[in-house]
Amino acid sequence: MPEIQGGCRCGAVRYKAALDALPPTYACHCLDCQIWSGSAFSQQIFLPEAALAVTGPVVVYEFTTPSGRTSTQRVCGVCHSRIYNSNSARPKVAIVRASTLDRSNELRVVAHIWVKRKQHWLTLPDGVPTWPESAPATELLRALTQPRARRLPRAVAHAAARTASHSFRRRPLQTNCCRLGLARE
Image (cartoon, rainbow, N blue to C red; front, side, top):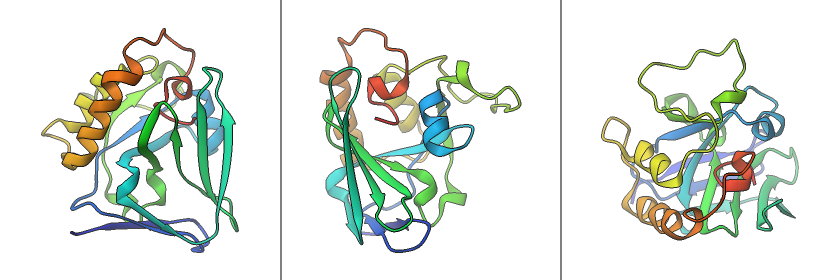
């Protein structure tokens, strides 16, 4: 199977993802993602964790989110670039930082969440789905799998659909994307 590759800033951590094409991405504009990324938003990709093969000195940082879930962050042990995270709310799903892909300049952002927190100087393109806060999981998944965006590999779509059907449905509205498990956890 073809693969895509990426890694940290210093090159000590590298990864390969068993995908035949670059996946669509979403941008999160919540304050947590702005702080974590040091930028106006974070750009992320959902992948099945089993499709990701990581090598190098990865440091794992875990914490409990306000909703009681465990968030597991993976960063380079040398340069501390954040590579990906997972959350107990979404077993077997990795949220990869899109900027760590070798071909990140070719990625397309097909959805924006937490736009009520976006920087005032940033103009979003017309026709791209946006949500003022976290998107309902099924709607975000739909945006990520629309034909105009590159389709997610079947394994990603199935993993995300399973997650959407049992992890997000009954949750009350939270105050940021990480509490819903859609971005920084």
